[in-house]
Amino acid sequence: MTKKSLIGVIGSGAMGTGIAQVAATAGHKVLIYDNNLQAIERSQGNLRDTFNRLTEKKKLTEADAKEISSKIVHTESLTDFSDCSLIIEAIIENLETKQFVFEEAEKIVTADCILATNTSSLSIASIASACTNPKRVLGIHFFNPAPLMPLVEIIPSLATDDNCLKKAKELIDGFRKITVIAKDTPGFIVNRIARPFYGEAIRIYEEGIADIPTIDWAMKEKGGFKMGPFELMDLIGNDINYKVTETVWQQFFYDTRYRPSLTQKRLFEAKRFGKKSGRGYYDYSEGAIMPEPKKDKLVAEKIFMRILSMLINEATDALYYNVASKEDIELAMTKGVNYPKGLLKWADEIGLEKIYVVLKALQNEYGEERYRPSVLMKRMLDKGEKFFI
Ligand SMILES: NC(=O)c1ccc[n+]([C@@H]2O[C@H](COP(=O)([O-])OP(=O)(O)OC[C@H]3O[C@@H](n4cnc5c(N)ncnc54)[C@H](O)[C@@H]3O)[C@@H](O)[C@H]2O)c1
Image (cartoon, rainbow, N blue to C red; front, side):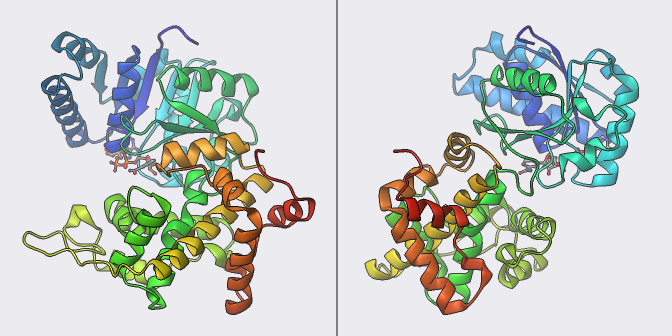
């Protein structure tokens, strides 16, 4: 399917609009449907602003911007999607609503149309189960903002046909995105492996080991992360981040290792969503003074090693459970959340033994499942193996 296709996008919110822009920029014609007229108008306005900005910044010529935007057509009728080769659904994160939309879409499209969902947290199997032909259903998970974030996770369900997976991957590769294949498991790759970046940072803060700016500083200073965990949570939105954490935890049958924190729940309840609401872990109101970190190198090292060891453990476990290949795990974390290095390569560099010792010490001290080292880590240590070398 390398030729230009007609792509259908269902849902003209933040993600749907971004995905439409990406597909049109890659030369495809795009239909975008929403059941809310205001959302359609907002999407049209947002796209106009985006293309104006891109031409002002000379990232696109006026002619190119005109051509790309002319490829995107908004519609209030799903029946217009009858000739689409691929449909990407990006509506609200609600299983029943998504199942209903898939059922409706399947009545309209041709037999070889691929049906994809951009869900962050629902299982692809549960959405596909609403379809008569679940072989053509899979997850195509873009990151926000879709035009800027290079990574796309492609998630076949139990029923997805190999040919459908191959065609979908080819098409999204053609969108100039970096694609990785993930197993249909909670959080897929990125939203699973990244959990401790937030959760362990909050835990360190709750225990009073360091304050918020110090933890953020430690991860940037020692780890080279572009943003600290609290800065990033405030950017993502504590409403979104809390919901993802809660869903991953629930879907892992309440495995305590993924348990959300009360600190973040309270922020969510108080509507301290972060930058977008003017207040999160930090105060973004005019004139507010950003608190300074306490730059103690020893504390920073302790914080960094604790969070990094948890991240490496999660990446190792994801590999052990075949959530993705090691190459795709590395790509996902560097291209999906901008980590400065792949976590498995990082483990090779630091030495798996050192990571294991940190985890074991935490496990002994706290007596919590949260810190159990992955069985793969233990086996690799016994054999003296590395991930890549
Ligand atoms: N926002 C993110 O950071 C992000 C990142 C990756 C994936 N996702 C996933 O993408 C999907 C969309 O998220 P979003 O942030 O764009 O949401 P959003 O709220 O911005 O947009 C959702 C749109 O869906 C429309 N809609 C709702 N029900 C509909 C229906 N039955 N038929 C047609 N349109 C309908 C709404 O009118 C709205 O315009 C969700 O599944 C979300 O989990 C979101």
